[in-house]
Image (cartoon, rainbow, N blue to C red; front, top):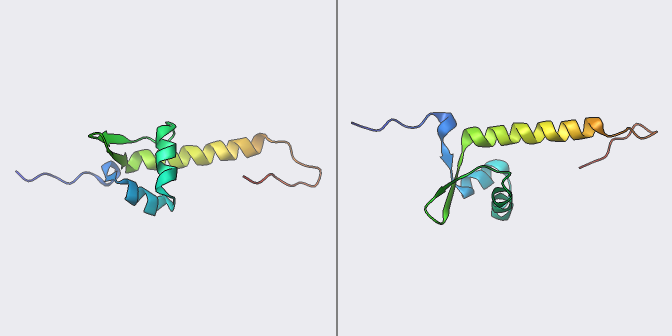
Length: 84
C-alpha cells in the first residue's frame, strides 16, 4: 500500500527550510533549539526536524509574549513605546 503524505500541519522541515521560512541563520535556529525555545525532533544524532504546527505555535506564542510585555510597560510622558 502506498504511504499517505503527512497532513500539511504535520510536515517536517529541515534546518535549511526553517531558515528560509523564518529568514534567519542556522546559528539562530540551533541557539533557539538548544535553549529549549524552538521545539524540534531529532533524527539520529545529527539531524533536526521541525514540525510546521509547532513552528506556527512558536510564532503565535512569541508574538503574544512580546505584545504582553509591551502592554505592561509604563508609557513615557511623550507617549513613546520602547523598541525591541
